[in-house]
Image (tube, rainbow, N blue to C red; front, side, top):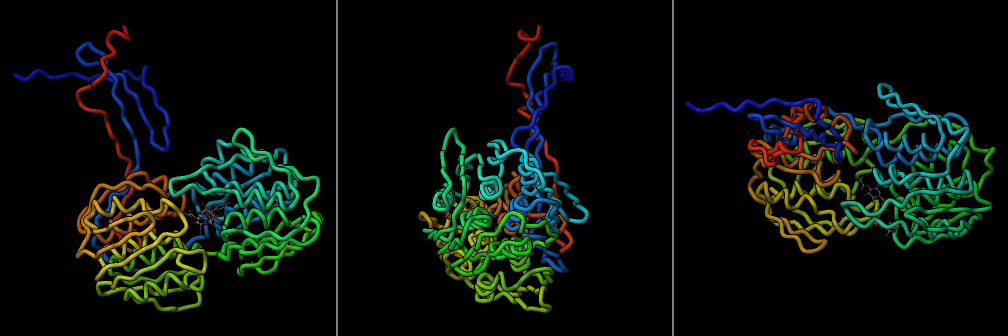
Length: 481
Ligand code: EPU
C-alpha cells in the first residue's frame, strides 16, 4: 500500500509579495511533521490557438506616445486641462502618478477615456527615480517643469531592453536655452533664472528631445529654432495641443520647428482629443494580414502609416481606404518578401519592425531588415526561431528566409513591440502558443486580447500558477521549531 503524504499549508507563516508584476507566494508547508518552503508564482499568460483568419471590425485607441507628452504639456497652463481619447494603459497610469507627485490634481475616467489635469498649483519640481524608472517617457516633465518653474530635478531614466537610449540631446538643448544643468546621484538638476530662445541642432531627429525642447522653449524669451527636428505625427499633435493652449509653435511635422516664446498669462487650459495610435493600427493590420483575414480598421489616420502601408502592398496585402479614417485590410495569398530599413518618420517605423519581421517569416523568398534606431530591437528573433522561423541575425541586420509555416510554442515577451509581434506570430502559427511577461504588452495595447477576440482570434489571458518542484527543496523543520 502506498503511503499518502499529507500537506498542510500554514497561512500564519505565508508571505505574499509582488515581484516585477508577478505575485510570489511563499508557503510554509507541513509534510509528515516536517516543515518545508514552497514557492508559488502567480503570473498572467496569453493562451493562443493559431490559424483563425481575423474578420470583422476593430477600432483604434488614442496614441500612447502622444498622450503621455500631452499630459506633461498640460503642466504649462494654470487651470484644468482635459484630454480625450486616452487609452487605458499602464503607461498612462504611471504618467498620472508622476504628474500627481508634482502637485497637479488628476482624474482618469476610463469609461469616458479622458484625463483631467489641474496644474494651477505645482508643489514639487522633483520627478523621482521610483516613477521615472518605470517609464522613461516620463522624462518629458523635465522640459515642462523648467519652462513653468524655471527649475526641475528629474531622475535620469537609464537604458532599457531595446537600447542605451541616451538623453544627451535633451540636456544640450536645455543648456543652449540657458539652463544650468547638474547631473548628480542619478538626477538631472536644471535651473534657469531665465530661458532665452536660440537655434538648436539635433544630431539625430530624436522624438523625445524635440518634445522636451518644444516644452522648454514655450515660455522662453524670443524665438527657438529646432533644426533636424523629429517629424512624427505625435510631434504635430503636441504642437497643436500647445497652440490651442496659447503657445506659438510653427513648422511641426517638418525638420525645422520654430517656437516663439509667449508669457505665462497667455497660456490657458484646454480640452483636446489625442490622435489615433498609428502603431496599434499597424499591429492590427499585421495581425489581419498574417492570419489571411479580412477586416476593417476604424479610427485610423492612414496618412500616418504611408510608408508601412506601401511596404505591405508590395508584399501582396490588400489595403483599401473605405472612409477617411477607415481601412479595409485583407490578404489571401502567400506574401512576398521585401527589404527595409527602419528610419525616423516618415520612414519605416522602428515600432512596427517586429510585426513586419513576423510577416516575413512565412513570406516567399528572403527579406532583409536593417534596424537603424536601436541597438537591441531584434529580441523577438530567438522566440520566432523557436516557432520555426529561419532568421539569421548579424548586428543590426536580420535576414529572414520565409518558411511554409510557424508552429505554436511557449514564448516570452521581452519588450512592448517584440511582445506584440509574438502575439501576431502565435495567431498565424499552427497549434497552440503561450506568451508570458504580459506587462510589457499592457504598456502599449489597450484591451488587446478583447479586440483580437472580437475579430475572431482565439486568445485568452489566464492567471497561471507556477509551483516549485513537488518535492520541497528546503527543509525548514529545524528553523521553525
Ligand atoms: N538618442 C540619443 N540621444 C538623445 C536622444 C535620443 O542618442 O538625447 C538616440 C536614441 O538612443 C535612439 C534614437 O536617438 O537610438 C532615437 O530615439 P528617440 O529620442 O527618437 O526616441 P524616444 O523619444 O526615446 C520615442 C518612442 C519610441 C519610438 C521612438 C522612435 C515614446 C514614449 N517613445 O522614443 O516608442 O520607438 O520614439 O520613433 O514616444 C514604443 O512605443 O515602444 C517606443 C519605444
